[in-house]
Image 1 (cartoon, one colour):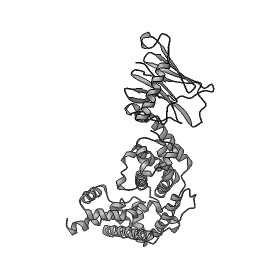
Image 2 (cartoon, rainbow over the protein chains, first blue to last red):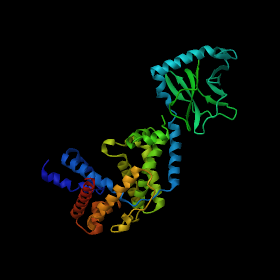
Image 3 (spheres, rainbow over the protein chains, first blue to last red):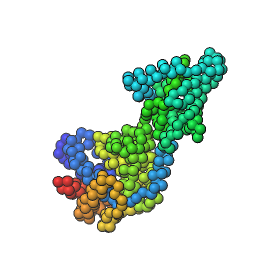
Image 4 (cartoon, one colour):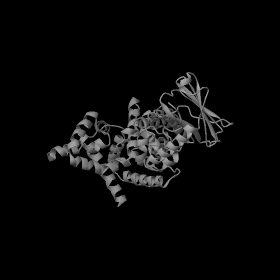
Length: 226
Length: 193
């Protein structure tokens, strides 16, 4: 590239950085910039000056309602996004030591659960699994393709915490959409719409609003016979 | 996984952005708390009234929420990127209001003075100190250089429009822009030395 060619474009550099070129001029300048190390170097030198311009303005305090409105919109938008955990691996579950511990626990539970109302899938109707862990009674009532998870004797949670149920299906975990909110008697329940292929149900304590993946150890784990 | 607020507060902006890209409201909230004030101030400076500044800031942050993954750390800081999003939104807003003249304070020294406000963090205090230096740097510019920079950056005018407004040759406008930026850059470098 000749010096005169560079000089011609270099004259546009400040205008480009200040956003003062037309779209066509901008496109032309960017094509030049791609192959011009001198202009790239000059741009890097000017960057702090341009970046400082917005910092130079008189400071105004934004109204608190702006933050509130933004967060309302963001949280509403985040909720539907928060659920597609089907493709995610069960992060902590995949760690060997934890996986082993959970496996041991699951084996112990398999030995401990009762099957009510005529057993599991072969009953042709509703079946119930019951277990008890950490003083919490867990009951899974199966009906059709889904089931309802009931918890009893749940301790009172701090106000910023909720219980969230998870199901594991073919090695991946899914969050159960409805969070578990214990009532005054320590009872809570949530509906699991599709139990097909689910081999484990568990419950964890999560921050208000729930999480995309379990963030702590389960307070309840129930193995579901296939 | 949604991170908790306390954890998000410990993360650098560049670490928050991937979380925002994955729709983490806590990460977004921290980002707003850090930069919302500067964003709103910039929007207000450009559009000139509180209601419009609020609208522009909200739109800008929502666009960041929806396109957080587009942030490229190799091209600068999160704050600069975010403020450039706000600036572009504000200029678009001005342009959409046909016939509405942008708010310009060419030689109004008071416009460059700082309004006292709560300094919440050391980082914020440092930013304000830097802002003071920048105002000083801009304040030292010859009026004709400050004018073209402000018309371009805060007014959203192209160099040819500025040439028309000031009745100057386009080459003169571009030259003043470059000289002005060189001087600000020089002052900033001195301030750091």
